[in-house]
Image 1 (spheres, rainbow, N blue to C red):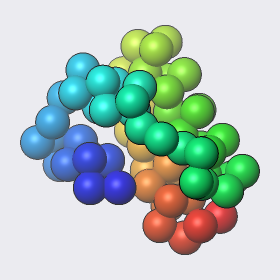
Image 2 (cartoon, rainbow, N blue to C red):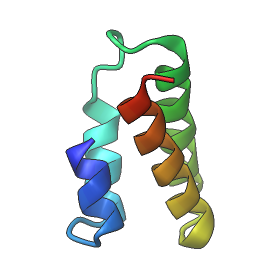
Image 3 (cartoon, helix red, strand yellow):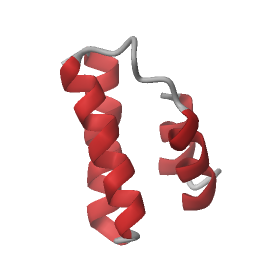
Image 4 (cartoon, rainbow, N blue to C red):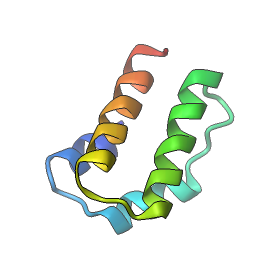
Length: 68
């Protein structure tokens, strides 16, 4: 979650976020949280950038924080 917050504040870039998510262990997450991380990975791989990526990062952060 820290990395997502750092990305939103522009302290880290897309490449670092992509690298960290590629190696993140999501096996301990519940299904909704795991799905949110997978959606974010796919969005980064699509290299959409802009508002869509920011929306997905925010949704992923919310899912991880709330456990939903």
